[in-house]
Length: 152
Image (cartoon, rainbow, N blue to C red; front, side, top):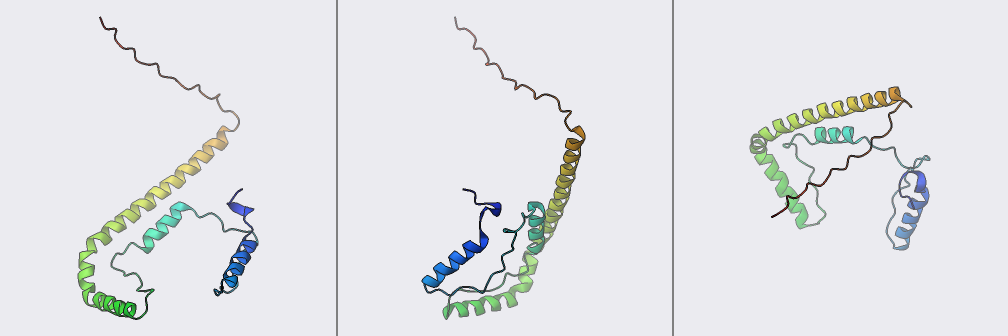
């Protein structure tokens, strides 16, 4: 049984999940647009990680405040908001060096990603140029065991 690619009937799967939610009395979401061709295309990890690094490079930019609690949770949110507003200058000063470091890491990752892509293209060109004129596979070399000196 494959669980990747077009082997998963996406519309049927969503319909079954929503039916199970309805049976349990849980509200279902609005109709989802499932592409006819099935699952989304594969994401390139190099560009995905670079985009994620760019998105989260500045440690002084706060994450959104949210809570799953009611009542006291709302008071905690207000306290966090007040702390952020009053301490933002201190936060910026404390994390300034981290922001610079993150910029260097992001730049290094971008350069390495570009080099990986260049090397992949070069390998593909070499493979296509080599074509069917490939040498026979080499036989693996089996190392011999070192001999122990004979004791007297």
